[in-house]
Length: 104
Length: 104
Length: 104
Length: 104
Image (cartoon, rainbow over all chains, first blue to last red; front, side, top):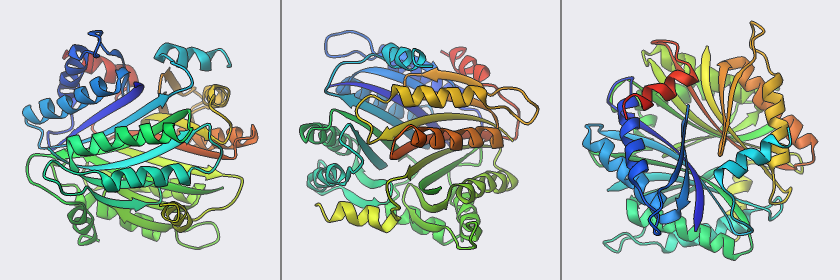
């Protein structure tokens, strides 16, 4: 099952700046692989990261993000995930954006 | 890794009423089990469901929700998940609510 | 425009425990009033608070939550809001929950 | 109060494709103005739109999105908003992204 997801990890108890922890998550996401060996598609934006890939690969990477951020010393993490799936057709992240831009 | 999560599944392309699909998800969540055989703790509210349990059991149940809702004919699903983990101490859903209420 | 919303306020830079800040938000929400003078309907759960009321009253209260939590010393806040509106019929928070429970 | 927000509007009861409704929201956001007359800063991504601007201007635009999407015939809308504020310093959307990228 292919998903387009959006991930926003908020470490708590580590002070006001969390970019170091978010960068560590980005590295986890970059190293993640789908079942066929391809990398996840990623787009870092100002309030999270778009992720496209297999359900299992995406959620395994998100779990690893929590493990890595806790390992960096964050005692608490509050994460928001959006995840979209569709069975009518396969749609990429680029197509989703283009589909909106064409109608503006 | 124990998590407190919040799940909101929005089926698209099935009309304005989605309570039948949400009820099917609730059944999936009720039947889900942690590694030690205990059920997930659940609380259905007006904009989602609180879930407490093992990371793997919770996310396996969420994946099954997508499979079941697609199986009911929904061609597209947009889900929002919040997930909190902490390493400083174990906290239950009831404790989270009580901890706020005590300070009001 | 009537809304059913869900609010989750995460103060950052104040340590691992945030229940004192969340309780202050709850007080703000309890004191908020719709244009007709009625209070917002509220339900505190383990990952946020359900809110029912006028669009303007609900969002004015959420803004005040940010002001109050910053006033308590939190230098940064990351909030997640879900907001649902419908024009086909008016639906209460209780009806949303009941509508799902009846189909289980 | 300056905010960095993320908006994801999901129209329900209009079929599986919602890009026309999302495009209408984007137009609303583009036309919105802060108190000093400047436009909101926007970045459309694959699961929403980043928005930077005054609290009041951002939330007035989000309310107008709901009005416009209902006006296009959508009987129900479920929206997710993330909103971040900070009092320690002013941070732009570009700085947030750069701050993460520098640490990778």
